[in-house]
Length: 205
Image 1 (tube, rainbow, N blue to C red):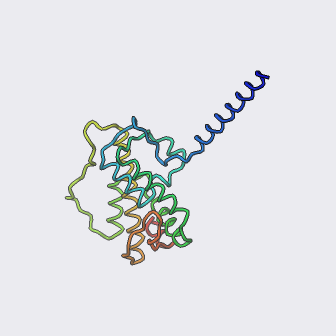
Image 2: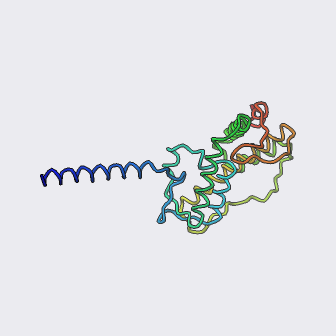
Image 3: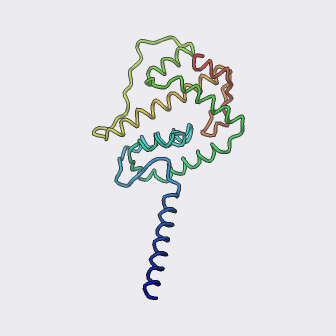
């Protein structure tokens, strides 16, 4: 009788542990991996990250493979703000109207035309598309890298600069092709009035 009772208790404990482990694994994870002992970058870089997420879904639009390839980050006091911003972007992405979704898709289609290009090349393309006269005496600018920063931070800065420049330029070109000088779109794509023709014009199609 005692052996049967002990066996029954053991089974219940194992089942409880299994359910608990499953519940823990099923808990939604933040879009960007983070850890108190992870890579720590400067606050300005994390602010750029949050702005890129807020306006263009930098993290929330990544697939799982891309996210898993990123290092563990230590966001410090920016942690909760970043997580809330990602959650907001994810919620907005699921509540777009068909028109908003079309605008959002048009912007991202235009951005694809700048894939693999550095920021200077993108800006030169912007100037040419807008009819600005090429200048040979512009002061070259260097990224705001921090001395002795982790290489992961420098890589993230380069990625964010390319991401933001390509989205800003594509959005300006879309709106200019329509004669539209209205408000910018946020990560919900609610105010960019893009069409297929404008997308083709912006991407050189």
